[in-house]
Image (cartoon, rainbow, N blue to C red):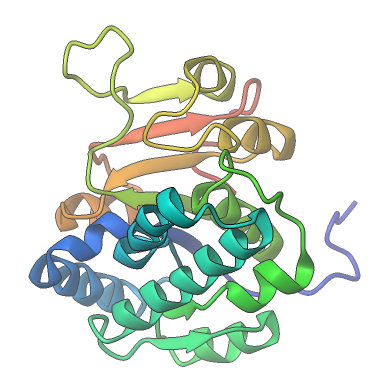
Length: 237
């Protein structure tokens, strides 16, 4: 039985969450953008932005002004749009979109589709006004919504550190073990969401462009795969 019978296929191959930390070095961020643009010739790629430097500023101001939860939620969502717009200038040929109906046409043109998620985050109202959920889990929700075949979080470290604190990074980690570790280089809401939806996620160093390229192509790449218990398909969202 076709589980997708009657439902649209957005035709998204890969959703990558762009960690805002990757904007700290514009030259390397531009190299990442160029890498993703080349990959978009053979992969249908959606970029979901994190909050980045603007979000950090909001957090600093909040320590003094103590924003109400709803205001803080809206400010951070707008920061994600700003990160997406900034990255669009570093990603040749990319195109931003705000509504899901727009994504297929961007991908048909073999462009990187960069989501500006504020309108959907606020309009759909599916995420708690909470400190525990971040753009990691938001990106996972939209990866599931778009039916992406693969999902990755690009950050400035090559995965999730080994809990023994020996400076190494884990190659694979179950959602159950990831949940037990709490917040790491991913937020603590992500492992249970992945488990509940039978999704995998790979945490990669977005500054290591060769690794990003290899992961897209299904080749070995340094990073941590977080996989649901009992699900054998690796990296499928």
